[in-house]
Length: 176
Image (cartoon, rainbow, N blue to C red; front, side):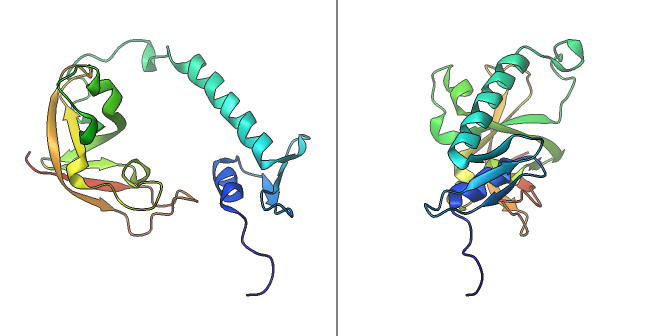
């Protein structure tokens, strides 16, 4: 192999989440530095990630109370909208519906749901088992609605979790 070694995983992950124009250089310790455009200078990956985490937490607090269009959606107004749940975390406890929800999607046919690949691909690159996913539909309230088991998970063959290319997946429901 010629040229520079590939950047470390930490550096690649930081760049994957970085806005356009951010570039990075590997350092001796393998963690690297990030050059942030706009006069911010160069900072370590750790400092950049820490700054981005603080920014994300501030945004979360700022947007938590926002409702698109200024009003709550009425039940049935968006019938194709679903929530995805980790079936291994669903219990008879009411709170499990909140703790198990991890993503969303849209019903596109009687037995098919369209979602993002990043929702169903695990950090190790494996695809979630269909039996571990439940699709909830029929209500804007997580305490209500019907759960449907998933029979099959299909992730776009060109999905790239680093570049977030082809971030699309299909879930075939076990029953309509």
